[in-house]
Image (cartoon, rainbow, N blue to C red; front, side, top):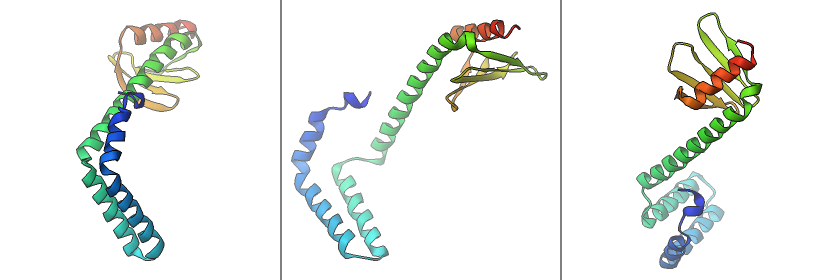
Length: 152
């Protein structure tokens, strides 16, 4: 699900049904923010905002699901981009074999580290960790091409 998939009509219907509560809440927030000058102001603002959120029917579970969905989609997109970059940057990859049996492969956009005997490697894209990946066909081909291009 992407932001383009969000149903515009659902939001329009929601605002049509709840416009009075939303306006009253916003006016109350404006008045509290402008008239009250103490810590109580922030307590009132948080209380009004919480009321609006509870009244709207949005639960913390819904927010958690939305955050989880966005996170999963982002990771999926980044993994796809990383796999494409592995195919495109394999010839530029620098393979380094360490004395302890671990290796490191770097390209302008990727870094892959792991143990030669392990089925798992750690992948970074633009310095952001994408976690541990199994050595699938694409990743194994990337490692072999990096070894060839580094003369190993």
